[in-house]
Length: 527
Image (cartoon, rainbow, N blue to C red; front, top):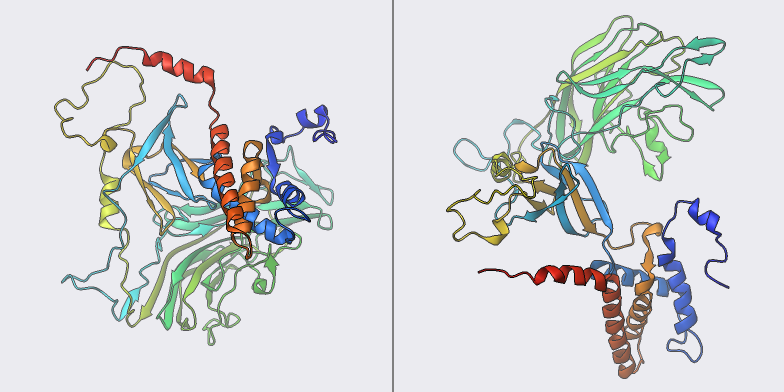
């Protein structure tokens, strides 16, 4: 039976899995290897499928690094932070570049003359500072929301959602039409404060139409190793009940888990990001917050949990609130977790009204000293590197200008003889750092993965299918006892030859393309 007998032309051309015939799935590789190599009177007499799967996955990993085509890439607009997060399945890069208005890629080159070292906190005399009697936590950033929330450096957050802006018109609930067209929630820093602007939203399917407000949260991980107790405080404003909004709530505290990304409190089978019993529930196998740690003797009587609360009512609840002596002695990593929401059904809320909740000036302190070296923010090396202004990037391709560095080329290092910009990778933090002339440009990262990220990725190009079989066979035979050495040597040579042949095939060399390139080589080059 042909390989395409189960797929018609119509199914292929009207589908979305184009070009799939050039690949073979890992499952098929394993099945066909067992047919061709395992059994009576074959090289391998007996082996479990799970064992073959292990060696097949190892083969994909090894071949992904230097034989298979690298087809993974990511593109971002580089923000003024000059940092890009490494992809979750990143192993190594093949090229880092930025693209101009014409869509042309300009390669960036790594610099080895700088880095982002650990900046040690020092006192006025230059002595190492291990913290004083009452000191703010060294690794807690953007506590006053002076800059937008950035997961790389400080706060991770749930995202604001368009309410009914996608609806063509109003929504009818119990015979009453509600006009919410164009209304959109907001959750981020605004005017120097963490701000949630909450509107009512409609969702159908949960016993009719439910009207609710989004539940938002943000969080930042803190290191409390060698710290026994911490004190927390912040300044919040929960608005008074108005326009149908009742009980606007802000909570800020210390949680064992990060916040919940689910913002719909009525979403089936998912807890609200503000359900205090959320620690007993799971979302996609993960315990979700808030999971505030215990704190016996909470002054406000808030369920004996380590958080402070602003609760709107007949009047707004505003001002600075504190919680002292929170016991963190049994923890090393915790989260400062903030949640903002208006609970319950918002049917009575006035159309297009909003409830605005704000939080500012969070303070986390502890008493005593920390025996570890303290980090004092970003290193001076990285700060200076991103502050310097390199030569401007050039977007033009043939402007006749060749005198940009008159008298400056003597002794020039070739790796520095370019104006596209530079980068270096902080492997410890998983970030790529760029020079300042790349800011606000479209940055492209082409990278290598190990081919095992998802089931859809575990495929092999048919040019390399034989290399997979030889790779698996050699790995199995070389790890088994009582296999003659000449058999192992034979399959080692066959594996080497098959991998080399696969690499040549996948290089996709075309004679006409080589000929076109060589035509240019016939030009006389004057020295």
